Length: 236
Length: 290
Image (tube, rainbow over all chains, first blue to last red):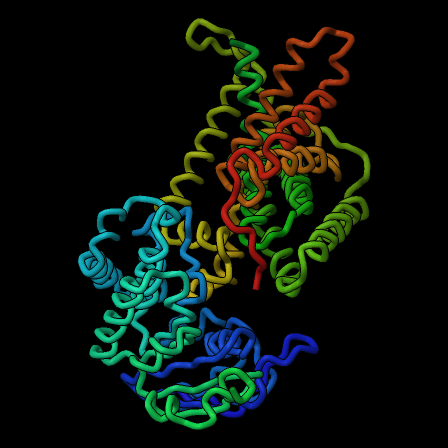
């Protein structure tokens, strides 16, 4: 479904990605792990059209995405929950959800989906009319995921979904991602919380210095003799 | 009552201008000083339409401001959308000077009289108070437009997208909000507001000039800063406060101090910003445009 081939991205003289390649199949969960500055966020940003890659290919169902703006890419079926959630703090919870369905022409079905998400996340239903800025971090994460899913993506990308959340809330988030997968949505997650990603994913890519150092299933990556050097950049 | 009506009328005029500036700043982080030239172009449309029915003149003024607003967005500001705010500001000055010189070359640099809606100078008695009809019309039009803008922003899809874009443009695009559509809508609305200000302003002053919008825009910009840059309710509130304060100072300052009323207004602005530098209704997240 998604194929990233030999992707290069730089911000001026600072190189973020050096020839990254990976694939995500329908319904799969793929995690990108790595230390700060590894290029994880840049990779998701390039796929979502938020930042421009200089070379390489980003193919979604065989069609090239590189060069398309982010508002066109979400229409192709890729939604991003960025790091920090970026909910619209001054808008109500319901308005945030309505914005998630911006690209949909089926307004009645979109409203029904909003109500469905409000019943899946009861705390959001309780606060539907309140400014989203009043939600806690975990509630904001729920809102950000629900908002992204309202676009009915076939690939959901999440940047650090566990960052700043309590372990119990992280479990809830990953439980919900498992449900999303069962509905056929592929999930691409960037995580520093390597343990959580390793347990939940079909495949893992260890990114460091803008390069994929190691790839495989969770067990393969964990047991690989080069994991520490791939993750930390040095042999421990 | 007369003074209060004056204060509200001037406040409404500034609020409409400030809202036009605030809309564009909200979605583009552009302080559009060319907004004053929309007012001037709209004013000259009233001059061209002199002698024709009032409705035709108003429609022509509206078309001139909206078409010019959309034209400047498409030709000047869209290519610079990724530029930093300083470059955008300089571009807006350049567009403003260009449009002003066009008016001077093709029309005249001297102010011209326009006999627009002279009947509104007549008095009218309202709740036992004699007011000028023009004051009543100005207050009514300002209130209607502010209410209309509030409705549009709160209850329509494009309004929701504009509010989202004003708070976090990058995230709005990631959700599929079309940048070109939202920004063009903001420019078109700023054109509508500029035309409304022009109609009321020309009806009051009876004069058009190439730089007629400059003072209004400078005061409107100050109003948006007081209200909170990036906050649309803040822009309207700031405009209303600056206009009302200015008119109240005009009424209550001793005669020898009246020529300096603007100095008192700006002193008040400085005091407000000392205690609340983010403005009265601070905007959420001032982020880069992409």
